Length: 345
Ligand SMILES: Nc1ncnc2c1ncn2[C@@H]1O[C@H](COP(=O)(O)OP(=O)(O)OP(=O)(O)O)[C@@H](O)[C@H]1O
Figure 1 (cartoon, rainbow, N blue to C red):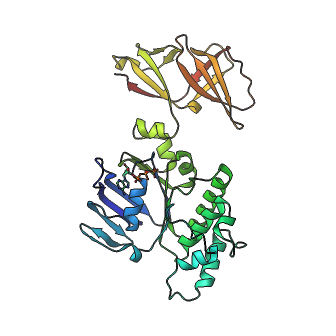
Figure 2 (figure 1 turned 45 degrees about the vertical axis):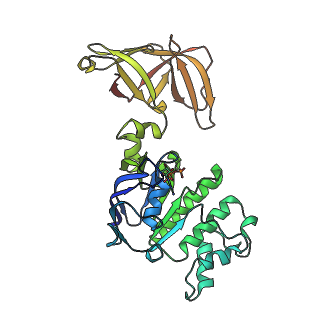
Figure 3 (figure 1 turned 90 degrees about the vertical axis):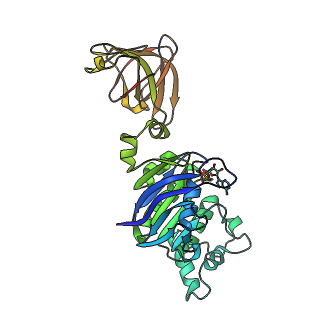
């Protein structure tokens, strides 16, 4: 069942020429983690603010937990929506301990506020730091404290705006796993905005991609990665190789050699062959119709990327196992297991 539905949400700021978000339709399942990803300025924060009630859309409706909370000019105020937010602008108060920071987020009349704040901090993994001040915490711990503060009032929906922004990989992975655990154990629904595509792939149940305020695709991480709706989405999750090729009856000729393809004859003009570095394989067998000369080897610990060049200096990248030894200048043979074809012009 959907907890949240956006219907045709559109917002343009008066000072701006472009729409911040335009005609957004999306339904978010209860208890799920929805990632909203996109480059800087794509409209992620605006969308979260519209959901939180911190901005009002020019057009569109929002239905939250079965109730219409935004409809034309009318809207339920932000403080009456059961939404917890983690925005960079709402940093922790530096002069308060983190326990007081979390308590302060609760209603004054809340009974057992101290205990609730402690429970929230414990849920966010900060049971040993109640009396510390924000400056005494690491950036990862501060992010946890912000999480505890947003969770304290037990919202139905948690909005996190780029929670990994200033975290290094270790903290990022830890917090990412904790957010997953917390969401799944409390039943809270979370929407996480991030400009980092890879974080979203491992964390979210569903991913929505925004580009210049327009929704490009919504789907599971596997759908988005394996069946991108367009070239923008495909490249957002890692730039694809692009080889220019000429069709013949039974395949395509490219600078790297021949790519057999039974329906190549259906194409009249030049095409682009598009594939990810993991969809090609370097072979020991030298009787492959595709080859290139190693121009660069990039080692990443758990894998390496080998760049091959054709005779005209055009490059492509192939992912290889970390233990394999490659030599710059050597000719390597390869296959492309999965690719897309696009008309070039
Ligand atoms: N208060 C505002 N006044 C005017 N323009 C704004 C305002 N807030 C956002 N914008 C504009 O709306 C567009 C979307 O901005 P938004 O902050 O939502 O993007 P974002 O994807 O969250 O970017 P980032 O990753 O940099 O935070 C941008 O062009 C931005 O300049």
